Length: 552
Image (cartoon, rainbow, N blue to C red; front, top):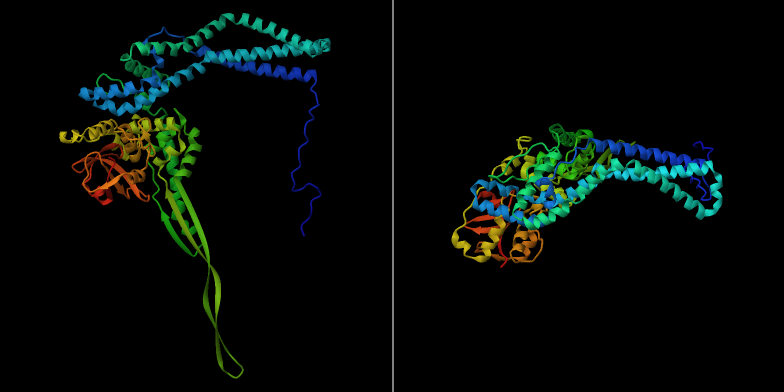
């Protein structure tokens, strides 16, 4: 028998005593608390002023500052069309279309960035800190006065309220007068920043063509302020939005994150390799996917989620989250009752030999170990919103402008080399419907494959690409998967340009797994990795081919 404790509440939760709502703090306590609050807010004010003092003085307004807000959504269509136009008219800018995704993403987020800069400007922070410190100090002096002159409490609630407000107003006025000169500079800075977007609107209406150059200048300016690692020039005379697509973190942190993720994979591999030595089951079954990931996918995910530079220490939790979602390890143990036959032989007193056979039952354990590699590149659509997914697609499209960081990655060859061109016979383009489909689809050649992507801002997967193109060309079936597109199409054995081509088994999924746009002569335009033309007569596509489908 175990010894009982003498505590009558042992093993039970004892509720805490509630504070009486009628308990009142003394005037001394209120004064002390008010003083502490004033001092803390004073410290915050000093810190804000020091930060403001380090801020560089405002420069005269040049063209970049005057048009900083041009990064709004309203220029999306213009930039899209302008780059496409230049690409087809000037061979010197063939690479510009590759960075269209970068430009669109940065332009869309530019306004938000500017507004954020205004909100978080040190001058604005000083104003907030001054306001809070003024209120706290006024409250302290009121309570101190009441403590020194108790008779002030005898005039009733209304009288006390009026006295309190009077003292606060007097002190606030003194503070404003004392800080008037210093406050002018901060107020002017915030006011100037606040009027920025208003001027941009007028400029955009008057100078639509000059908007592109101004926007790209803004990108360069913001990239310098954010200390991005490198910048390049795309096209002949057209500055691309490279800064926004460049990994901003230090090499040591990015390489460290990759090493940390590989270490977790190595630990998982060692666990599986030694499984039968470290476990005691009777029978084992293993169904294991490969343990692997691409480093560019990892770094692009981390950078998109952090919205900027990060350190290895800051992303440790994110690395673990990604690892846990990529690798799903299942260990299923089943116990069966089995038996074997046992025979006993014995001799009786007369010398006769006898034997008895009986069953001996025992527990038999069967362990099935399953490891699913969900594929790290499939995770972004599940853990990111549309804007974050756009940033991820942007980093993948450019490999963070660091193809040297992980040169062994297969993405280096995919994204640093321009997809091969394919000539479509003019006879096929006589079909206006197909011509419109091809014109829209070719806009996105070179865009990276993004699982779940369904728009130019997020890039595409195979079905997202096909759905988007056809919906832009007169259809209205929304976003469908490969199987969904197959279900609404009519099977045909004589495909024509503009029909769809379907495949199975291109990855581990039941039914239709891939879809592309048939362009004639045994070729398709599809969202591979990246979006490109592909010859259907290769052994790979022949082995996975399923059917052709017609949407019109």
